[in-house]
Length: 458
Ligand SMILES: *[C@@H]1O[C@H](CO)[C@@H](O)[C@H](O)[C@H]1NC(C)=O
Ligand SMILES: *[C@@H]1O[C@H](CO)[C@@H](O)[C@H](O)[C@H]1NC(C)=O
Ligand SMILES: *[C@@H]1O[C@H](CO)[C@@H](O)[C@H](O)[C@H]1NC(C)=O
Image (tube, rainbow, N blue to C red; front, side, top):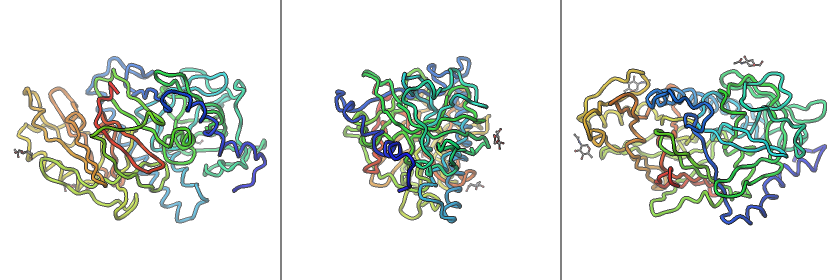
C-alpha cells in the first residue's frame, strides 16, 4: 500500500464509500434501486431534435458507432503497447481516458454534493472515471446548468496525491496543496485536467426515495476542451476498473447492475438502469454466459461463439487482442449502436441472408449499411431471417427482427452489422442488438445474464 499523508481520507476512499450506505439500502423495501437511462435522441434529452426523422437518427447513430469503435480499439492497442513497458499496477485503467467524448448514446441524472445539485452524465460502459466540470473552470465545454462548485458543497474533499487511488490515474501529479491532479488526453485530441475528489453522489430512485453514497470518488475537472455536445456535464464510468461507479458502490449493490434498453424507435419509452437486487435478471428465458477479464479493465468481454442465420451456424474466431484462445472475443457495449464483427464473419452472414431472402436488394444511399432490402410490400419484413447469437456456456440470444434490420430509409431495412476490420477487428456487441433484453452484469461472479423483456414495461 502506498504511504499516505492523509491516512483517514485514503482509508475512506477504499472502505467507507460503499460500506457506509449498507444500512440505508437494507432499510429500503427492495434492497436495490433503479433510475432512467436517457437516450440522446429521446424527448427527455436536452439535445432532442423534434425535426429529426427516425431515418436520420439511425444513420447518425450508425455513424457514431465507428468513432466509438475506433476509440475502444485505440484503448486496446494502447494498453498492449504500454504493458510491454510494465506500467505501475492499475495504470492500464487510464486507457479509458481515450473516449471520444462526442460519441455517446445514453446519459443519466445524478446529484453531487451537499446540498445536492443535479447533473447529467454521459453513461460509458467502456470507461471507469466519473467526472464533472467544476468551478473555477479556466476553459470548459458549454453546459446548460451551472458547473459544480466544490466550495458550495459541505461534503466535498480533494483526494491527497498520496492516497492509494491517485496512482490509478496514469497521468496524475501532486499539486502544491498535495491534492491529486489528473490530466487526460482524449482520443479526439481533447484534454481534461482536474483534481481527484470525493463527495456524496445521489440518484433519484424510480418509485422510491433518493439514494445517496457519501465519499464517492470523482474527478473535478477545471480545464477541458472535450466535446460534451451540450447534453452532459461530464462522464459516468460504468466499466470494471476500480474508479468506476459500479466498482465504488460494489458492496452496497452486491456488485450487480443491469439495464433494459427500449426500442430505438419510437423513443418515447425510457430505458432503465438497475442496481443491487433490482438488477436481478430472472425468468425461464434467462440465460447466463461468463464475463472475461481482459485489458483494459474497463471493458465487459464475452465470448460470442456463433451467429446462426437461416439454419447455418457461422463460427467466430478467437481474439488475440482481447484474450486469445478460448477467452472472450467480443466487447459488449451500450455506448455504440451497431454490432461490429470481423470481416469474414460479416461476409458469411451477409451471403447467407442474401441467399435466403427473395426481397429486392437496394443500395444504402448513406453508404453506412452493407445490406439493405426493399420492404415496401406488406409483410415483407417477416421474410428477413432472424439472427441468433450463441455465447459460451450455451447462452443464446435470438434477436427480434427490429434488433437486426433497421429502417434506414422509407421502405428500406438494413442489416445492423458492420465490419470491425477498419477498427482493429475487435467484435463489439452494440446497443441495437441488446434492445428489449434485460441484461444483468454480476462483477463478483463475472457473469452476464440475458433475458428477453419488454423494456418499456419493465
Ligand atoms: C485540447 O487541448 C490539448 C492540450 O492543450 C491540445 O493538445 C489539443 O490539441 C486540444 N484539442 C482540441 C480538440 O482542441
Ligand atoms: C431461409 O431459411 C429458412 C430457415 O432455415 C428456410 O426454412 C427457408 O427455406 C430459407 N429460404 C430460402 C429461400 O432459402
Ligand atoms: C472483406 O471480405 C470480403 C469478402 O471476403 C472482401 O471482398 C473484402 O475485400 C474484405 N474487406 C476487407 C476490408 O478486408
